Structure formats: structure tokens, C-alpha cells
Length: 133
Image 1 (cartoon, one colour):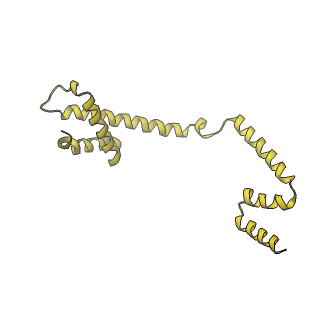
Image 2: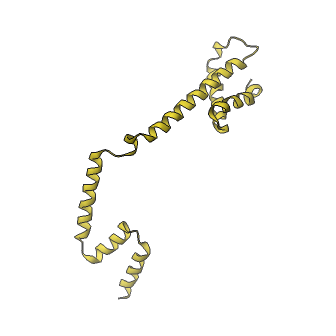
Image 3: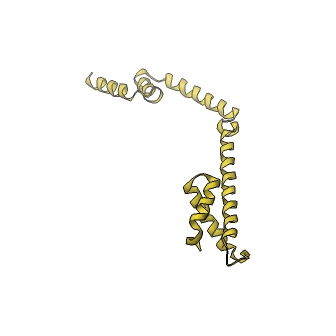
């Protein structure tokens, strides 16, 4: 039964999800659902309409799931941290900055170059220069 209707059902699913791989997945899901609900099949001679309705429902559910994911990704609550988190992070950054600035210059400069300025090559040059001296 799967081989007989598979390509037709994939084309049907594609009209809803607009992606071949996703439409194949939806058809596979529909076959699993159909197998689990085989007792509900009324016309054993022509199961295509029943399978098609399952594929359509699976495809619509996929579109709804994807649409929700897209909408949720744009909500500000999902993108931004809370005001409290931002304050705690800025306070922590200020304290870290103050502690780094209080270090002796020989230690402070490599840390600033490496972690804050991301100047790895400059740090290598400084370490080689200190070894020469």
C-alpha cells in the first residue's frame, strides 16, 4: 500500500509544506498514523482518500508548528534578557573591569589584550619581547 500511493501523497503534502524533504516526512508520519488507526479505514478497496486526509492533516499541523516557531522567535521576551538580568550582567562586568584594572601592568596588559581586545598576535609579540629582555 505504501509504494502504491507514496509518490502521490508526497506531491500532495508538498502543496502544503513547500519542501520535498518535509513532505516526505509528513507522508511517513501519515503512514504511521494510518497503521495505528487501521481499524478506522472504511473502504478497504480504495484507501487513498483516507490516506490523503491523514497527509493533509499532518501537513497542516506541520505548518502550524512552524508558524508558531517563527512567531515566537520574533517576540521580544524570547530575544532580550530581563531588565534584572541585564543589570546584574552590567554590574558583574563593571566589577570585573575594576578588578582587572587594579592588577599590576605586567599581568593586566596581556589580560586586556587577550580577553577584551582579542589581540592574540599582539599578546604573542609581547610575550616574545619579555623573553628577550
